[in-house]
Image 1 (cartoon, rainbow, N blue to C red):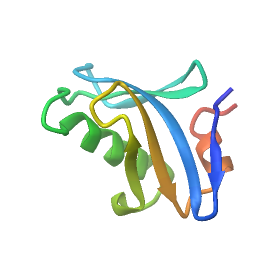
Image 2: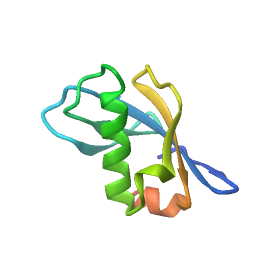
Image 3: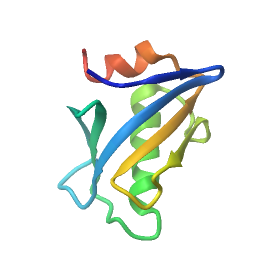
Length: 95
């Protein structure tokens, strides 16, 4: 089950990122986190930008509504999604 934290203005999404993958996709849930694979390498923030772009498309929000707030240089991150409800995130993995 996805371990989301609701906030006053949105939701905090735990993310496990697999950079340098064959394609960008949401691969399911791993240990309570949203597992995301991205083709971008883990250098100079490229993978983080790819994660934000993928989540923005999937959630139907603007990229500026999303931000990596914990773990910028780690594969385990927390993404803050402003203006997004937990239910919308759960639909990405059909829990």
